[in-house]
Image 1 (tube, helix red, strand yellow):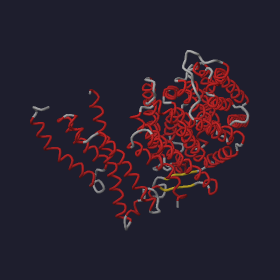
Image 2 (image 1 turned 90 degrees about the vertical axis):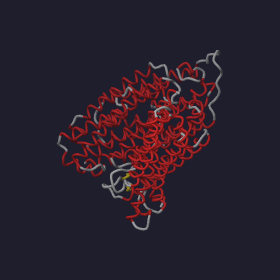
Image 3 (image 1 turned 180 degrees about the vertical axis):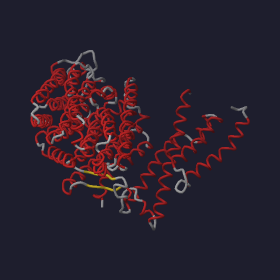
Image 4 (image 1 turned 30 degrees about the vertical axis):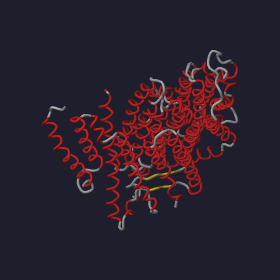
Length: 492
Length: 138
């Protein structure tokens, strides 16, 4: 019985725990409840993974109303791989982030912080599970609203400004998305994705459908930090509380990419994607992000900001592979979505440890931390190597698939740009490692010690995943390949 | 506001009717126009009117923000809890059919409880938002 309820449990666990957290007082209880919830959610995800791998796509009718009348939850390989990254990072971040939350969130706000975090998790999870476009919008709003508040909770006063900026542009993005949904509904009379896919085929040529397509792509583009509408992202990631940065950087843009994949390939289909020349535009924007964001990252002083720009560049890789709309392309896109979540989760969580012990996260704060916090900085370095794409890490697997996707379309120049962008990654990651290991900490500053044990566990869970899926990539690549088949197969 | 006797008397007269109307909209929502959200807002306007005329402090004595926060969470839990009962009875989440003997009264009961949850949360949220903005000067 329980296995049939897994899709809804995945959303329900954090949804029920969030109001409970809001009622509780103090720090210990909400923390324990949240950690318990995310660990249980991770188990549910593993259960879903096993079920999808053995029996294929799962469909769950909310309220007993069969789709397309009722809301349907649909779990396939693509949902599962995104769920794995969301739940995995949420678990690592909450298990490891306790000390960081104590330092950065006031005691009176702690219960609400946990409630918001769990609501955010609910929203992201729901977006991945639902098979209904409007239900997706509701979850998008749940996750967005909680994100705005979480960002505003940052210790820096500028966090408020960053949150406000994100609020304005994020609302525009969500509105564009829902306008697109409205237009689609006008033309087809349905909101169920699978049903839409069938019905759009009949009215493809109309201007309304094209307009809906444009609105939805731009709306989702804002949420995923596509290059010309990305400017909210570095501020939001840099100013948010450290733990929130780690969670958001690893998950929220990934879920937006997931929606983009679903909307473009499942609902509108590859022919339309190619006919509207969106393919070329997205490849172009992806390449632009790879280069411009990487170069910008090199010149950042705040390491959190540097990693945020690096995220933009990595989204560039994902978008480029996505834009190819070929099987190797979509595989690479999904795979990098997963792998980048692992890298950035590990890097930002290690940085949360640095913020906890050294107080701030400017470049100079890393000086000498190689000796003072050996385990944290070793984790940071390994995750950094993964970001560059060194063999033995997930970064290498990603780059391999990305290059394969580029060569598949004879994109030798693009392949060269990917390699060049990887070199840029060395330029922004390596100076940090050098500072940590080859410089002495300013003796005038108070000495630092190693991060607390739970935090090290969190960091090393993610770093370990980086290495594990780098040496044994079968699970991730298998899921990514089958996701690509599902997405592109559905369009044909 | 101590000398505005007309305002004070009229408010006292109006408040029971506002609350009654809110409850009417709440519990008649499954047959007529209305439902939890509208009812919650109407209920909150009663409290807000009270706060406007008799002052924030006495309004907070009537509905302490702490209680409102619990009410806020309870509404959500009630809504989600009704769904969980569906799961416990072996059906899908939020399947109201299994809540009572037959599907018809099950659906009736389900929607009533769910809307009650919405009403609780919305009225608490509206009142809290007002308290927050009104309390900023203090």
